[in-house]
View 1 (cartoon, rainbow, N blue to C red):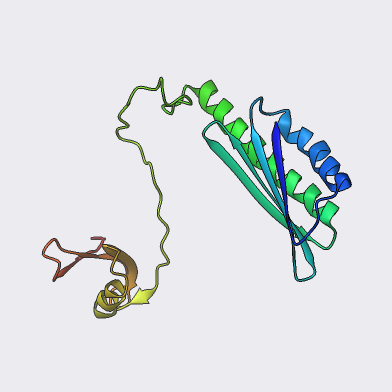
View 2: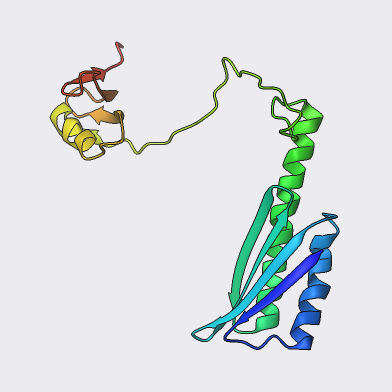
Length: 175
């Protein structure tokens, strides 16, 4: 592992450098060829340690601040190791389950995913009149629809922009 240590407002002593190298051995066991960029600095009364690890096309970054520099280095190493383990577990799980996602993009063929829910969106549903729902949707120019509880019928409805861009439609359950 190639390690670059940069001190901003702090002198990087031999002891600090050795401590960082010793702690990064925990990260090194996960990767063969990687580059770690460590930045240590002081902000107000806190000692901040930031580590960015570049491995192939992946980048892991963590930052921690504590009153003691060594404590912030320990904390940032723990955060990084957690990120790396989580990513590694996800990759292993994808391989085990024969997922559609391929790890190596160079050898992966483009596969179309059909009939799968790929994204979830969460919206806060407020009781509104249809007129108020129009105004609420106008306040969000990037949104095309807005779920709400119609105060006149007490049903969950969705107001949406029509393709003409000037008018609106409402979807309301029948029962």
